[in-house]
Image (cartoon, rainbow, N blue to C red; front, side):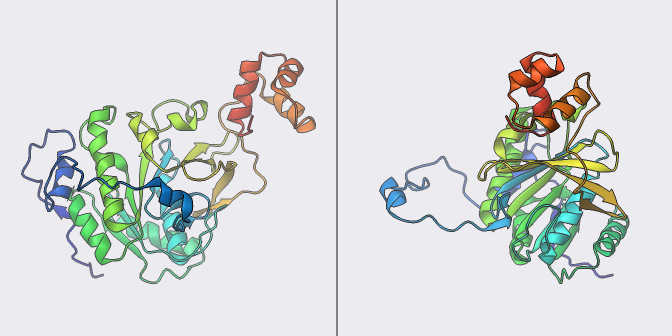
Length: 332
């Protein structure tokens, strides 16, 4: 098996390796660093905005995210995050719909995986491709096996441009981040490097990240993802996987979107080597609670019931009733 010798790993840059984000300073090595001035800031007369049509967006997954966006894929440990993005990449490269989402065309995708040995990743890709029915991916899916290398983000941009990459996926985030993931100061350089990568390549930049310890189902989507809260405020789209309450092979898939309306969560079940959209599974997460069964029976018979009606019917206050609706994927 031959390997394209595009270089994306380098010796560590000649900077203080203990400095937060130092790995990413190489991205700007070809450009002069300077404070913003009136020649570097783009000022737009809003009169043009209100008298002309905006440019057409370029969607990747219809109604979820576009080219040039930053996308987080968040899930607890052992939720098959890497398999999920691997499957998504094959669908995007082949132009086939992914679970409950429409893929608008074929895309050129690059996965930069930093965790798994190359031979094992080779097996995973082949098995996943077989499980999906061997869709035509042509030369549109590139894999970078980055385990053990120091990642040079400037070189990533050059390689992505050379391969005309439209979607770049980093798996996992912790392998490319430097410093403390709980520190906003340490995470900002990482996120800024994703901004520059998206600007340089016009590609969507996706990253896979783990949840903090504890029950993910008990946290709001905005609070998912371990580490600093700047992560949750930075992405354009977030896809979360949460363990299903009743089936360990089923994940509840939800999204948090900046540029599109909210979408209902759905279930995806792992079976025979890939995820499939589960039409029959109820969207339920977490451990069964005190009021769960009563709530489900009542809301099935009274889908338009108010929070007060629910609280009175199942014998709790409005706050637990509201939490139940959110946890089970029902909108207020």
